[in-house]
Length: 152
Image 1 (cartoon, rainbow, N blue to C red):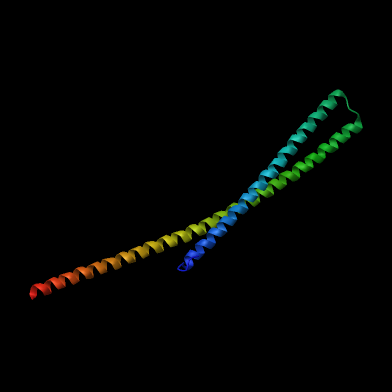
Image 2 (image 1 turned 60 degrees about the vertical axis):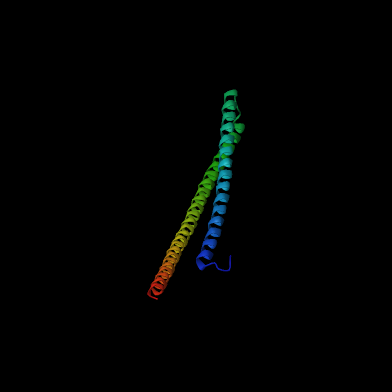
């Protein structure tokens, strides 16, 4: 921060930091969502493969104990799939929350940027008015000197 920075400049810097931090948190949650979705997809594939093996075993003839083992394993895969789907849904909610947080931080930063822009425009108008007054004073001074010189 420079020596002549204003409180608004400080707020802008803080808002940028908060927005960037919210963006990093959002990226992390999205990465986690992709991992959970990948695990869910892998479980789906594994369950499909195992169900196909059961169908093939049933076609070839399977003893009751093996059938029961297949069914118990498929039941455990179904429970794991349900947990994974719940985990994905929870992760998607975290992503949504982080998205909202990032958007709030971005809006805050934009608001501060708008205020800074308005402040700069007002400063430029003020400087233009001062410059205009100074020019008027210079012109009036020259005219007064010219009249004075012509009166002599």
